[in-house]
Length: 250
Image (cartoon, rainbow, N blue to C red):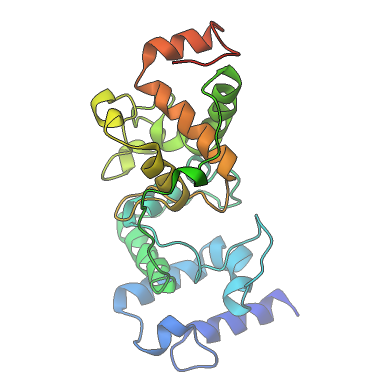
């Protein structure tokens, strides 16, 4: 099947009342803003080069890293999309998505409205503290610190920054701003059971996404251990210079 034919099928699928329209389009036509976003989506490479296939053909079992079915991706607020348009790899490091920083503010808002319409029926999951036995038991030592540092540098750096204070490359685009992990008073009030859940499922009404499909439970607890050092600079300095690097860091 040619790309041109796939494009036609996708376009038909996106027009309410024509063919097998996506479920979210059957109950209510696209708004004017969403229709404008659809036209931008078709105009830009996101449609012509990538997402045309997953909008035309359901991708229920797409392999990891494949172009996602935008009708099934997690829901995100406007600021997440803005950051993703400006610097995609600061938000999702292994994405093939090109930058759309050239879009005007109005065009970006329209495209966001269309994308949010696509997955509006996806359930929002709120983080709830998990049972302690769901969190892999790992010591707080140099090896775990280094493992968590790798995970953090790969998935968290773009928003939360090198220092963990929310000053990442796209942090200024987000509202509320990314969490400041150097805030010892705030960190001391959070249980690991809750923070582990936030890393897994994200936090509604913020740009914080969930990583349960990207990170194993072990990786999630390793990055959690790493985050804890931001609020404890003395212990962080000790582990970074190798003092007690192979033992417990209390």
